[in-house]
Structure formats: structure tokens, C-alpha cells
Image 1 (tube, helix red, strand yellow):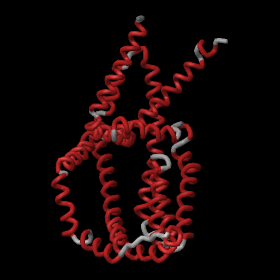
Image 2 (cartoon, helix red, strand yellow):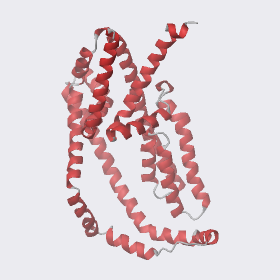
Image 3 (spheres, helix red, strand yellow):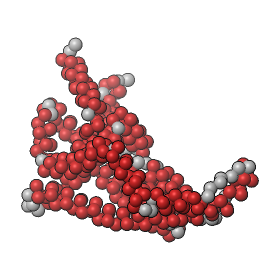
Image 4 (tube, one colour):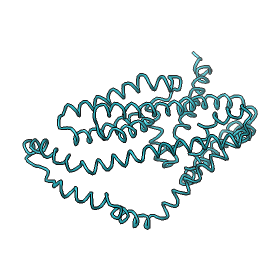
Length: 352
């Protein structure tokens, strides 16, 4: 075995061992990977503050405080609205069941010879008894908390680890990058640096662009569904907009939820078709205008690549794998580009 082949075997062995370690530790790595992704997204803001002579530790605190305030503001705005929508749903559900029985049950009986026997008053009494009273909610939640205490504590610890790890990653970002740079073999340094810069460009364009797409599509769905008259426009629009990060998932999820809500609310089929048109137009606007404009054609992450990466790494590593899917897909994309460029200039390809 030549020295070059031995080196290849060594690096492949290292890659296999690292993959195995990641697989075994995937259950505890999720908060650290989430913190690394947030740190990567927020690092440009920290760098900009540092250029204004703000100490890096203070810049990190300011950026994280701003992020926390933004999250708190969203919660303060969203929770009362969602509570109102939930109360409206509980109040209106018996009416919708009566409307469905009056409008759709005769057709079901005519077509299939069967009907749905539902007593709306019974459902209303159940909802009022078990969900609208604090005692009913407590009676349901407290036993569940007691039986799931360990899992809840684990989730809380993970949530606390994310900002802690994010702070240290942002504070020591430059030194960590420098240490990684020192570990790269010198004869590979130029090529690895070039590939890393391309991966950084792809991830930066994709992640920051997708955040903008998610916000714009959430605003679109909430606003247009509200104009159509759908009572649950706010939660459905937000869910549909936030899930556009996974291609087609946001549109499909929102379409299903909106169709169910529209079928319960409206008596005419035309109103349901109008809701479908909202999501059809939204998918068209996102795919043809918003995503190319904000994400850019130069990214090169095809929707099928994104879907496959999310499913494959999620299957292998769980939620930790979902977090790693896009960075690893970007690395693979750039690596394949360089392999293709090398192949096209090689004697193997050019030899007649």
C-alpha cells in the first residue's frame, strides 16, 4: 500500500469514527448544534458591533438580549391572540358541527347510505367542562407533569444550554476558527479554505434568505386568509409561513388546516375553493418570485436535495440530524462541484 493510499485510508477511518461518535452522541448534541447555528446566524451582527469598538463580550450580550427581547415580544403578541382563537374554536365548534350536519350529512347519506351521528351539545359540554375551566386543565396537566417529570427537566436543561453555549461560541468565535485553521494540513490549506468560503456563502445566503422568506410568507398567509374571512387566519398563516423552510411542507400543512377550518366555517364550496386559491397563489409567489429574490439562484440547493437531506439525516440522527442536514448538504454540494471541476480537467476525462 502506497503512502497516498495509506493516507486516504487514515482519513476515511477518521471520518467513519467521527460519524459513529456523532450517531452515539446525537441525543445530547442537539442544543449545542442549535446554539452553533444561531451563533453562525448572529455572528455578522456581533462583528459589526465590534467594528464600532464595542468589546466582543458586550456585543454578544447585546445581540443575545435583542434576540431574547424579540422572542419575548412575539410571545406577548402571539399568546393572547392564540388564546382568543382557541376560545373561539371551542365556542364555535358545536355550531360548525350543526352546520356540517345540515349541509353535508344529507349528501353523505345520499351518496354512501351512512351518516355521522354527533350531538353538538354533548361536545360543547365536554369542552366547557374539561378545557374552559382552570380546574379541568389542572386535572389534566398535573398528572401528566408528574409522569413526565424527567423528560420535562431534560427539555428545560436543553433549552437553558442553548443560550449558554451560544454565548461562549459567539464570544470565542474568532479564536475557535483560528484553532480549526491551525489543524488543517498546510498542503491542503488553500483548497480547504476555498471550499469553506464557498460553504459559508451558500449557508449564509440560504439561512438568512429563508428567514426572510418565512417572515414574508407568514405575513402573506395571515393577511390574505384574513381578507378571505377565515376566522383562524392567524395561527394557520403563521404555521404555513414558518414551515416553508422545508419545501412544500408549509403549503401542504397550511392547506390542510385551512381546508378543515373553511369547511367548518363556510357553508358554500366556493369559499373553500377561495382558500385553496390563496395557497396556490402563495406557492406560486414564493417559488417564482420571493425565494429566487431573497435566497438567490446561486445557492444551488435544489428543493429535492433539501427534502432528502432533512429526511435522511433526521432518520439517522433524529432532531440533531435535522439541524445538521443543511450544513452537510452545502458541504457535499461544494465538494461535488470541486470533484466535477477536477474530473473535467483530468486526463481520465480528456484522454481520447
